[in-house]
Amino acid sequence: MRRLGEGDRPPAAADAGLTVSVTSAPAVDGRRLRSERTRHLIIEAYLSLLRDSSQVPTSAQIAERAGYSVRSVFERFPDLMSLRIAATDYAFAKSTADAELRDLDGDRSTRIRSQVETRARTCEAWLPMWRALNANQGDSDELRSRVRLARELIFRRLELMYQPELSTLAEPLRRYTLIALEALTDFESWGRMRENYGLTIEEAREVWMRTIDRLLPPTPSA
Amino acid sequence: MVGESKSLVDGRRLRSERTRQYIIEAYLALLRQNPRPPTAAQIAERAGYSVRSLFERFPDLLSLSLAAADYAFAQANTQAVIRNATADRDTRIRTQVETRARTCEDWLPLWRALVLNQQVSEELRLRIRRVREAIMARILLMYRPELDSVSQVERRRTLIAIEALTDFESWARMREAAGLSFEEACTVWIRAIDRLLPPTPGS
View 1 (cartoon, one colour):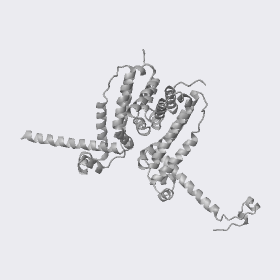
View 2 (cartoon, helix red, strand yellow):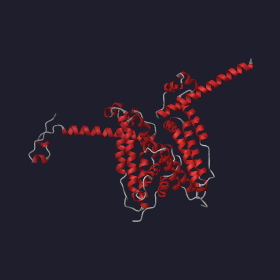
View 3 (cartoon, rainbow over the protein chains, first blue to last red):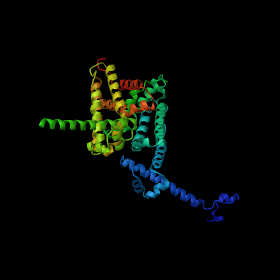
View 4 (cartoon, chains in turn red, orange):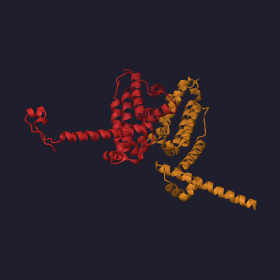
């Protein structure tokens, strides 16, 4: 360990008369940063392989895509399941950040458009990840709990966006409407519109917007 | 003599067919218990045969899953006879929903296995496509009066929406995640389809 000299002390600390005892901290921080970066690149490699092919990638494929050795992968993740879970958490954090709630107080058509555009973007970006997650959820309680959490978030967002209309319905009709809205705007519903029916993003959004408009009860007057 | 050997051959063929059928049914029964594709040993044990017998009838597990898909498709078609295609709107919606719900209830585990394995086989993908086409054709048939009254673009949009709504996994989420009863889940679909369809002409 190299002892820090006077020149290593940050000016503020020196001014305050503090003794710098963080020996080798920059080296440790640098190492941690590199390790974090490697971890991140491995997760990115896993996600990009999922986008290329719906087959769950092998550790060799992931290592090759990330530009590391298989050993490096397993130094960061004890097994492929841990990598899947980390990738899922990363994807959730990213998609939540990208899907900021907007236009909550907008009129009916603005709210529908806003919700559909956000949901379509999420589906377009994360469908491969979602498929892999569903295919593997039988192997892990942790993956199952993440699928559940994602669905709960989708429900909560629908409830928020269409609160004025849903508030006019008594239970269980309110719940039934939410269930139908969730089914219509499911990842696989988006996947089929884009892959099977060959709809463009704009056409697919149009299907959802018109459908949601029909499913929702009239908007109460303000 | 000729008659004797013919009946021997027929008997053997019949037994072989029966064994094949038992193996398919064992595969489907295991899928209903656990969504993970069963192993050859598990299927053979459930059917009461050896693994060797299994592979005498099916060269690999993919062939078995294809045979099971064909069997299921034929069975589901028999169960889902088209009824009330010319009845009033409410009757048609209820009939279509109940038929679709029964199909989802019975064949969801197999459907999941097919979807999970579709990447490994063009034949599986083809069967999935065929099932989806059959679902679309039935929706079109049951709601012809309403769908014929709108433009082609609008008809396609409505068909896509009804297909998404009545997907296998939509049914599964209502039954497994939301904990709805069969009747409650049917009500969700009936109400939603009624809202999605354009008005019935002349009503």
